[in-house]
Figure 1 (spheres, one colour):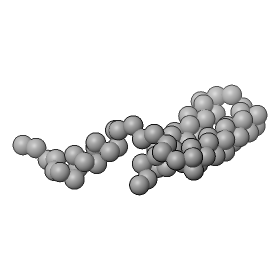
Figure 2 (cartoon, one colour):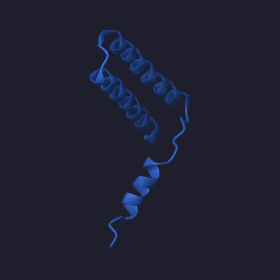
Figure 3 (cartoon, rainbow, N blue to C red):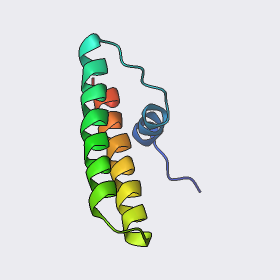
Figure 4 (tube, helix red, strand yellow):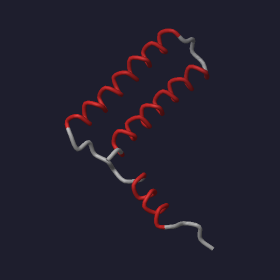
Length: 76
C-alpha cells in the first residue's frame, strides 16, 4: 500500500531541492535574516549563563534562521 499522490511527491521534490537566490533582492533578504540572527546570537551569548538552555537557545535560533531562509528561497 502506498499513500503518496502527485501533490505530495511534488511537495517533497520542492522541499528537498536546492533553491539558489535568483535575484539580488533575495540575496539581500537572506543576508538580512543572517545578520539579525547573528546579532541576537551574540546578545544571547553575552547575556545567558553557560549550560544546556543556552546551547538550546542558540541551536533553535540557528534553526529559525534556516527556516526563514528556506521560506525566502522557496517562495515563487
